[in-house]
Length: 504
Figure 1 (cartoon, helix red, strand yellow):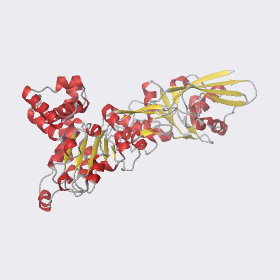
Figure 2 (spheres, one colour):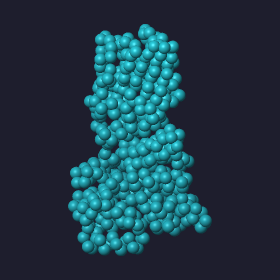
Figure 3 (cartoon, rainbow, N blue to C red):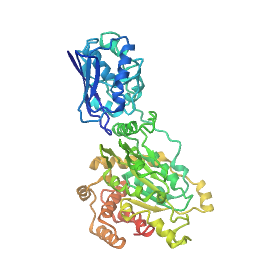
Figure 4 (cartoon, rainbow, N blue to C red):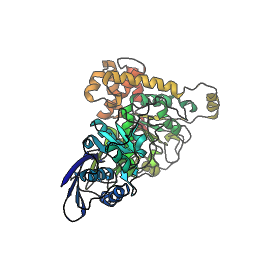
């Protein structure tokens, strides 16, 4: 009898719990039993592993083989366990050496020929293995993914036979070389391409500087979408940890491959207004991340906001506050990060008129349009502005004026964010109530202005704190330590639209 134990990791959201692969070979009628809550793709690995071992030049034991994937209560899915199972069988049957196998985590799906195939969604597991101090064996197809992680001890293989040769003292495996962390980001669009709309550009810079949510209202053709798409061009690039977290979510989404040339750019998700609530927040029988999680550390742009299903819009209320989404299903509960910055655009009315004062829509149409957005949802949006339409003379004049580039604005945004991080360790949008008391102090005159405005506009306690956070960002942009009345006044000017334009 012989028993061998190896380690690999499963996928559970963006977590990667350790899986112990226990292989026991005993006397008895030939059998291959797999236990530990394996799903269909894992159970099918018995045939893949048998053929891969034989076609790699080894003998498949004609005895009773039992494979246990522990812990037993964690569902196992996919072909990522093939390599660990095959190595465990060869080690238990004493066809390869076993001295240092416990120091490695094994990942890879085996072809019938013994070739080792790429695994989707492997990045979270690689991060967890690296943090646990393990060496890692991966398919060559996952080399680029592993190269994103600094100081990782990963070795790439093309086949099972190549790995077994190295284990038995033959040719050593090639180690994955981490790529240098690229600090340069290039964009095909620039903020200078947007003519006029100085107030909107100012609001965009404030939103970027403090991480605030932004709603733009205006008739078609006023530049709302252009401004929204240029938000990421003025945001500072992600830190290495932020970039890896964002890439991990994309890695497990199975929706798109990661572009490793631009993986430090902040994500920009712009779902169509026909998107379902499940696609927006995530879900399914095996919960996958939705658009809000794919926008983690980036921007979620909802164009034509009032055309979205109201239920889908309302599902954003909790993640806008908490920065995460908890998805519960009958058999699985998964929590995904969703710390995104919301940028939304809408018309003043369903007919796209110049403003609500010049609207030709009926009262019933306006009521249906207003009811798409609830007061609790609007209460969570820090900045709400109206964009006027430029006439032809203004448009021609703007062509001859200097417009600040994304680089110029981005430098100011980066400096403002660095000030916030140095002072409180996070952005102003994330200030808690106690931090607001410490960092958002105002004098009695400014406090009276704030109280009067809250009473007049019927703002909630949440809006009170959001006004202080927004005023703190405006003061930081002016490099002023204490919030003044003009900072509060400007912040109030960005909040009145939720009552005046959309209504209660």
